[in-house]
Length: 398
Image (cartoon, rainbow, N blue to C red; front, top):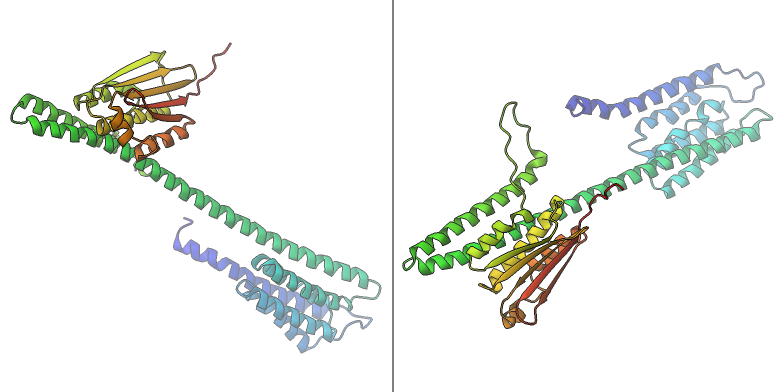
C-alpha cells in the first residue's frame, strides 16, 4: 500500500498543504489579534491597511520556506523589522521568525544558520522595545531564549539527518564489501572445484589417448573417471548455485516436491577424493588418527578444500608421486597434513610455497576460521601442506 503512486503523491503533498495551512492560519490569527487587541494607553500605532499588508508579507512567503529557506527567512526578517519600525502591536509578528529560522538551521550548514540566528535575534530585540512599560527586559529575554531554542532545534534536526545519512552510507558500503567478499569466496570455490576436476580430467584424457588402441580396458577406465569427475564438478557447481539463489527462491507450491540440497563436501568424503586422484595416477593413502567427531560445516568444508587443492598441486607438479593425507582429530582442533614424495629438484623449481593462487586461497580459507596453513619443501624430496584449525567444542558439564 505504501508504494502505491497515489499514496506517494499524497505524502509528497502533505508538507506543502501544511505550509499553506500554517501561512493562512497564522495570517488569520495575527490579523485577528491586531484588530481586537485593546490598547487603552496608546502604546502602539493604530492598525491600518499597511499593518495587515505587512503581516501578509511576513507570513505568506513561508509557504516556500522548504524550497528557499534562507531567502524566506531574510524576507520575513526585513518585513518584520518594517512592522516593528512602524510601531504596530508587536505580539502578532514576534513569533513569525521562529519557523523560518528552524528551517534554515535544519537545512543549511551551521555557518549560514548561525548568521541567520543573529539576524533574527536583532530583529526580535528591536521589536521588544514595543513591550509594555516594565516588562521590556522580560520581553527581551523571552525573544532571545525563543531564538536560541528555535536555532538549536533546527541544528539538532540537521545533525540527526546528517548522522542518519552517514549511517545509511556506511551500511551501503558494508553491504558492498559483503558482496565483494562473497564474490571472492565464490571465486575461490570455483577455483578449487574446477582446478581439481579439470586436472583429473586432463590426466585421464592423456592416459585414454595414449592407450586407446593398445589397452581399451584402461582407456575405458580413464573415460569412466573423466565422466565421474565431470559429474561431480557439475554437482558442486550446482550446489553453489543453490546457495546463491536461496535468498531469492520463490516458495514451492503446496504439494510440490522440494528440491534436495546437494551434499556439502567434507572430510567424510576423503575416501572418494583419494580414489579419484589415485585413478588419475597419483597413489593416495588416507590416514586418520585421534577420535573423529563431527566438525562444524564451515571447518569441514575448509579442510576438504585444502586437501583437494593440495592433491591438485601434486597432480600438476609431481604426477605419480606417492601421497599421504594424514588427518588428526585433537580435543580442540583438527589438523591435516598432505605430503607427497615428488622429486626434490622439481619441487624447488616449480612449487614455491609463496606463489600460486591455490596456496593463497588455502591460507585465506584457514584465516576465516582462525586456522593456519604452512607449506614447505621436504629435504629428502617432496612437498608438505599442513592445516591446523581450532574447533570450538562444548565443555562437558562437570
